[in-house]
Image 1 (cartoon, rainbow, N blue to C red):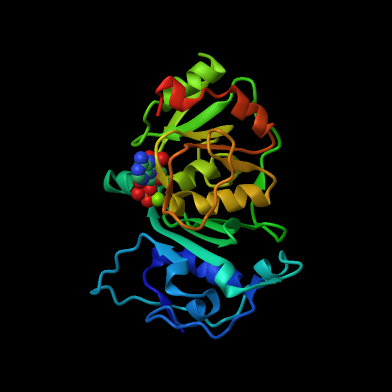
Image 2 (cartoon, helix red, strand yellow):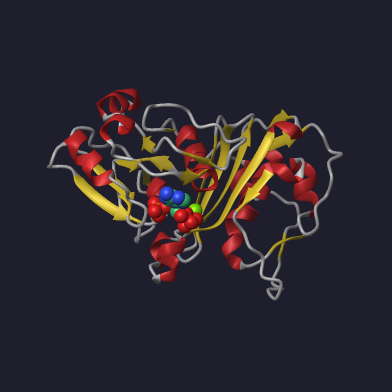
Length: 277
Ligand SMILES: Nc1ncnc2c1ncn2[C@@H]1O[C@H](COP(=O)(O)O)[C@@H](OP(=O)(O)O)[C@H]1O
Ligand SMILES: [Mg+2]
């Protein structure tokens, strides 16, 4: 089956391999050109949200033989059946676009996320240039884990280098001047910074904070992975993010793992009141 174009779409291939683990109970949905069986399994066109702009000249295709690799199968204990109409798929075919244009390739990821009833359940973050892939499924399996320790008092905080807003001021005001700020590109890269990732080019951080508007395809996969591993990604006021409806969120982002997330939320200033948005 012709599935998608280009090597950078390995993450999409990964999620297709995982999709049978979130089984659909409705097999009679429309088929879209170029997406064939995957789309039949995932619902109507509105349910696939992607940033991709397809170049008609690019004829390269990746073939999928419908076999789920053993290393993934052995991690998924119990597949769950869900109605197709409850599923939304978010795809970011190139995260850290700005950094890619600056040839800062270590920040670039491709991401796919499956949400069920707006809740992120399956996330894949792939680094096309180092060929590292992290995936995790809520109440399923994963190939990545949290680190053993995190610094909650004076955390190293990974933040945007190109859409920073007032994030540095917010971080220093909340955690003090001893806090290390790590500017980095890409939401996928920044979530991986919180995890135990063997990739040599990956920096490590204790928290990820973002204060400006951000799109759901940038954050859904990271949210699913963090959630699957016991971590959290919420708005800065601690609200869970719903992955249906609108394309983006306004309330900023706080991502943590193995920390008291609600205590961190209470520490953060109210951005509306402080004018730090
Ligand atoms: N204020 C904003 N408006 C729109 N997109 C934003 C944004 N802030 C961050 N993003 C998007 O979120 C991703 C991570 O941003 P950053 O690297 O600044 O942390 C990038 O995705 P893309 O590279 O896929 O466009 C970026 O464009
Ligand atoms: Mg992106």
